[in-house]
Amino acid sequence: MKMNKLFAMAISATMLLSLTGCQTQQQETTSALTLMNKINSSTVVDGQKDMRIWYQIDPAQFTDRYSGTPGTFKTVVQEMNYFSDGNPQDNEADVSMTGILLKNVIKVDDSYAVSELTELNPTIGSDDDLTALCTKANSLNMPVLLTLDLGSISKNNSQFNAMIQLVSNLKEDEDPYVVDKILADEFFLEKDKEGQDCWTRIGQTPYYYMSLPNSDIPRINLDNQVWKQFIINAIEHYFSLGVTGFYIMDANNLVPNNEQKCADFLKWFDSICKERKPESVNLFSYSAWNDPLAEVPMYAADLGASGAEGYVAKAATGSISARELGNLIEQNSVRTQNMTAYFLGHDDGSMDLLRSEDRIAQYKMTLALELMLNSQVIINAGDEIGLTSDQSNFIVSAIEDDSSSSDDAKNEDSQSEAESDAAKLKFGTVKQQREDGNSILNFVLQAIRLRDSYDSITRANLTVSQELSTDQVLVLARYGNDSQTVLVYNLSNTQQEVDLSTVTISGLPAELGGVLLTGDQEIQLENNKLTLPAYSMALLK
Image 1 (spheres, rainbow, N blue to C red):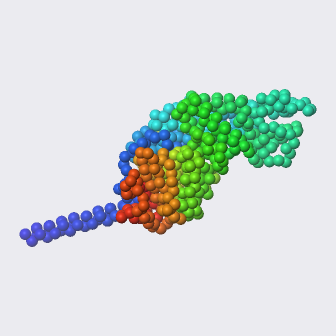
Image 2 (image 1 turned 180 degrees about the horizontal axis):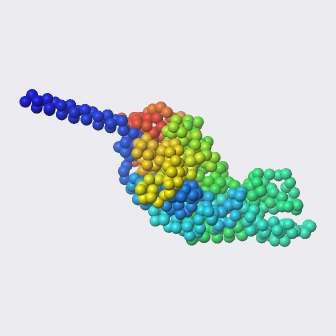
Image 3 (image 1 turned 120 degrees about the vertical axis):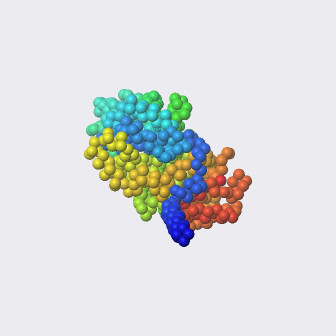
């Protein structure tokens, strides 16, 4: 009997130690992800909406996982299931992208000027390859947009060479606009511009053509009917290959020194697209807003918001106040009639400043602002895992599944190179980040899940609460007809409290509908007092 009691006591002690160990392990594994999963919706309301998250891709960076050679349209297709598996309810194996934006795919010369609008870069692939990419993407509910650089053309272009020939063959006192008005009008020609920026002399003639700043790349006259027909041909050509729409870079530079003509061209461009494909989606970016741009029925991206020097990142890092950011965002929403688009990255690679261990929370909050406050969002490939600009070619190494089937198909050199690239990744591979509850990837996936769970996030008008917003806290209401939410951001490195006693949603007191966290502290809402840990966001419903 005594032995039985001793045995029972030993078992009880063992069980107690085991339970204590489990509790300790559970406490140790508490992460931002476990806390977000407790509150955030697991049901996507409208994962196939037309307000999309576009994955911006330079195909050359999607290296062939078997040979390690530069990427093509075909290698993008090989990796496409990572972008989306077509099921918005499940992101276990993909990153829930809902569109693709292709860049650097049209043929350019040594000065990176477009040669012909309908010619693809042959090292990236053929028309048939682009068609195959679009077919695959569309089957996964990811329409494809193509980046177009308009307003200038390569000196190798046939029209430009014809114009040079025209001017070079002029007799004394002949006027090119008299000899061949249509050809001369395709460009901007004037006499006696010596020493003036943006004008390049044509041989030894007295004529100059307008060129890009600090360059001899010729500008084209987008008001000219010949160029308009070339552009129509390009639109129809790419539509025939399966492209859904286009991104027009920096609209301010389309027509020099004429804001109205820039806007008129964009309106014309969009109308041509919609006539031929009513479901087409078109975006443009601008470096400086002007009133005529409000007339353009396209989604507009403010380049002043992008990059580490953009006002979104500045607010996340404390360079400007949260309230000031809110005012800028609301202003942008009003003037674009809520047709906003946003690029997180910038060509200068400045976002690398936030992709560091000591600033990762600020980087995540920049992502949260981007994803939750804009209709169309453009994420550069690798943004979702924190790839720096010098690691952009490592994207395939980062998403590599390391399955035995793919290993068998690889040669030893390419496999070793891929493993070496993966080891250089600052924040780990996709697989490693999925297993890390505090990773950038899991934060992004939670933000996308919230965005797709509340229709007001992308469609409703945006209003800043001047009463509740402070230097550290941004409070934004998004009230639509069928969905109403309030977003509360803590953009500081300390805990903040917000009194919600004056906040009602659909006539009822606010309740917690979702959270985005950068650490292991919870957001709490008790007795109308919202407590937010450092660098966090609460969605109220």
